Image (cartoon, rainbow, N blue to C red; front, side, top):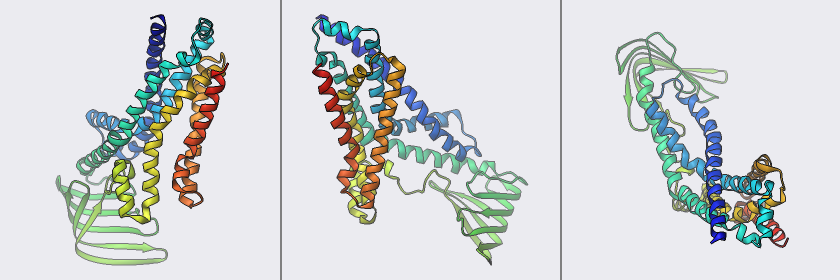
Length: 355
């Protein structure tokens, strides 16, 4: 009974540390993504409801990365605190084995493993797709509202737009457009009038009575037109689905149907499996490192945890590059970092357990 109460108390502290670590890591990674999105959305304005939805849709993708990290940090922080306060020494002197002391970590680690699988297999792809659709919707609906008479508009990336007048919300007159989306070919468009056309994935202008100047290197080409559709795709990515929006089963199907791009799909599939599996390895690594770290306390645990994952992600990217270059089989490249972390974790765990 006493053993159960001790383990429950440790598990409670682990869960609190895990939640705090998860919030810290999610906030840190989310800031980078929000800053990148803000450059795209800054010209159109975003409501509080839209921003809340964007933050919500970002969470599953971020959680795929942060759940294993938060698990390791929570173990290092909790057991580092117990070690610094000599509580681990007291527990071991009372007859508790290292495996019994580490038992609360097993429960939390297994829970994190299944939570990470849920994010990787289902919620992550759904969130990525919903995010792309939401950002496209915001830009498609609101970007035309930012077009003002006699004001240079830069709401669209690499495009400058100027209109002389705007008789109705969807019609334009006296249009001047500079298109620099193709770096090697600049396009300048003049038109007497135009109509704003919107659909689910893109925004376009139906221009009438004008001319287009195409500049490529030292050559300039002039084209006259009666009607010309100038199409925009105001989204974070192209309309086609990204790898992050595909479930593991979709990735395998795409790899079969598109052999030219199969390596990218296969490596993403292995990453979806290896990231949740890291939670199981952290069970063995976390408590061992907390004891080895001695009395370094919370700051030492935080430093060690971040350092381990920095090395892990470096090895992960290195292995994937080797696989893409054909130096090693894709299975070896995708699981290289996991295999190294597993060996180190088991060796360290057994060494601490024998003390």
